[in-house]
Length: 338
Ligand code: KG4
Ligand code: ZN
Image 1 (cartoon, rainbow, N blue to C red):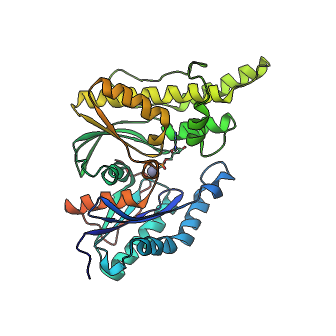
Image 2: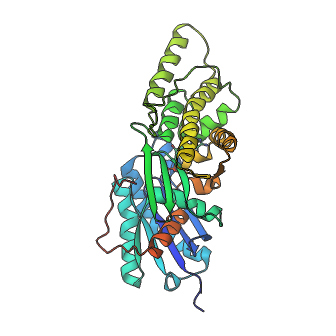
Image 3: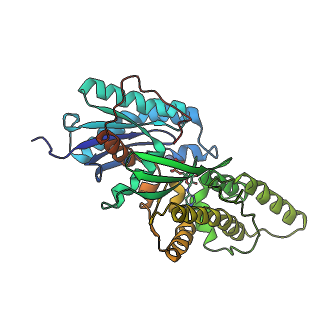
């Protein structure tokens, strides 16, 4: 019997996860298959684009089959295909886009190209079934650090973003410098729990007053200088202290700006998204600052914070409902803006 729910197949291949999911009515996850390449890229200390696209190509059909199997549906029952078409690595994006177009064409299913960043925000609709716009969104990932006003499902107004490194990128770079390895975010998060966040004074970079932009590139240099000075003085480095102090400098600025934006735009909720949204200290600090201002903070569980197909399916569903359609000329746009 045909499923009465509206089923979306979401495909995500923008970076190092081949991820496919089936989502019902934009909110209910029926399957969420994530084939991570982290172990492959760890050897190189970061994502190698050529290897990423080759692995996506090898994996994509199996991951799509697994997502359909786990949801216990066939392609005939799928009502919509959503696929990430940017931003991301061009070779990686192309694999998902090509797969989505092929299925859409062969099975005559409507297709919607999804902005990966809108997907990260939509992850919250899967976690919080009652959540509806308007709200302020904070998207903090490996490639992006954005504060976004969301007045409606299909509308995202970016208020600010990073001028150099993204928050996750800063975590990854500093983790490498202090010898914690890749991926740096979760490792710094863990090490910081045993460190003193006041041990080293890392700069808080707020930029000009009223700006919602960020700049994190100076932190790596500051960490390197600190390490060199300590080494020259013959002092031992306390990695946990460096991790905790660095982390505090990043998350304090992010939390301050997000809460300030919510206040300025009269939003009563801040919705967090992206890999760095699973950072323990960021969650703690933003909740503290927001609750003092009567603002609620929502975030997805860690598995929905990092890249997945379900968030793409949810974003596609709401875009489709608002009348968006993509043609077979849909192409990867590596530098797609919000
Ligand atoms: O959203 P995501 O999975 O991929 C992108 O679209 O970039 O984010 C990955 C980033 C990486 O830089 C990773 O180090 C960071 O999120 N990350 C964290 C934590 N978990 C992942 N950063 C800080 N604390 C964490 N717990
Ligand atoms: Zn992402």
